[in-house]
Length: 88
Image (cartoon, rainbow, N blue to C red; front, side, top):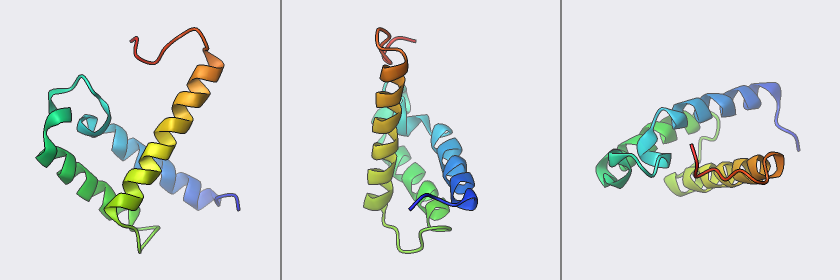
């Protein structure tokens, strides 16, 4: 079942929030290895995530975020096959 316009908007909001937490995705960041900051960021994202998915757990959120990251990488590599995402 395809997501509704409202759900798509919500997902984009979550992605924007996620981007605001480099400790969750930017490996070169000092915060990336700070477990307390990561947990606080996941807790904040989980509160937002529960606005739409009320029964969600932190593990559910992590799985969804990982799936989105994987999909993004696959799409990026299909668009730019010679370019790796590791280079900035």
